[in-house]
Length: 354
Image 1 (cartoon, rainbow, N blue to C red):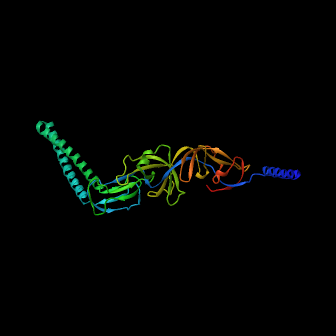
Image 2: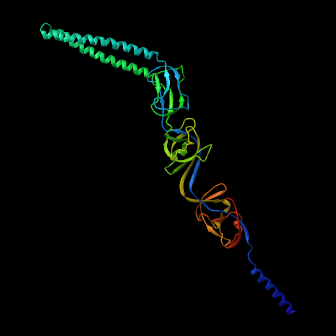
């Protein structure tokens, strides 16, 4: 009887010993690599490529537009004619100025001859001083009238030249504000020109965001039809007042580069990002709250084991969290089954797409 009890006890002890020596099971886990962010995405906005310098031209004389010589989109060079007025009035003024000049020139010739004659008579002692003075005064008056007539003729010629609207710099026609047959006043806006040599990106931003923009904000400008055409940009100007209808403020950006694909009027997509302190984003399922502390499980890829590590949470988002510290770029964190893990536990790592 005693021998039977001893045998049973030995078997139980042997069984207990075999359970302790049995290796701990290896758990399969999902994990993702830690990636660090050093910029904060502020959004994406649509805009266009525009010329920094635009000018609206008008005629320096009034009249009826007889012809438009170029259309919207045309490239013009210095001296090219953009539009013409009916020159009838200016030609009549020129003929009148030419007639006035011919009349005054004849008077000038007579005044010169009379002044010479009176001077000769006075020198021979047969002419009166008063008559000489009148002749010389008349000569001076006629000379002044001659200069005035010459100036009037030049002005009439200029007025005739102003009947043609010309550009003084290379540009692209972006808008016509008057049509052939329309009567325009002096200085009235007729055509808008844009200089294609200096381009910039133009976007409209919500007022709240425009007020918060700082020098650290970085802009990435991309063509909407081809994202490979891109350039970095910085703020050149923010309009002080918001648009009354859209409540947005126009922002003009200076481009670091101007690719050939950035033509005037090209639709663009502008991404805003701001430099921030380095932070890491991981799935929310990787967090574990224990005794008021937040931790994650780090995978030792060499030994195939996991260990907990305390982290500092910066922001919780929908499905993800931002960590201020606790993890390093390139480390892998467990994203599933964190509540059933033990420090130093062997694992089989299955990579999950972050």
